[in-house]
Amino acid sequence: MRRTENFTNPGPARGLGQNLPPGETGRVPDIQSQLEGLLDQVWRCEADWRLNDRIDLAVRVTRRAR
Image 1 (cartoon, rainbow, N blue to C red):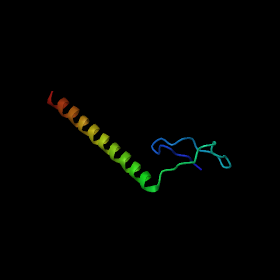
Image 2: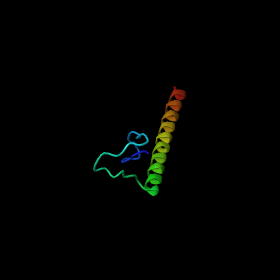
Image 3: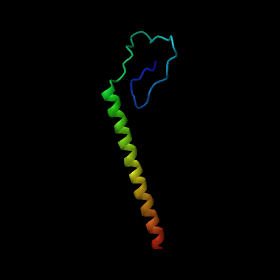
Image 4: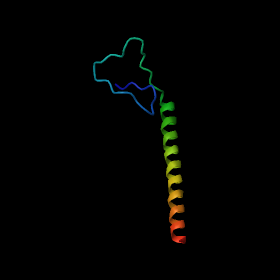
């Protein structure tokens, strides 16, 4: 069982038979929230890749112009 409070940075996995500390309810985001978080991360990575591609292209164009 895995306890996750922030699904972009999951906490340590608990072994079988280990109980949650007193007061913790084992909150796990619902499937919709998990999907939204996953898609958000994918979109951010794609945006970073596009930015890096534009930077690489700009560097190559300026090197050719010399």
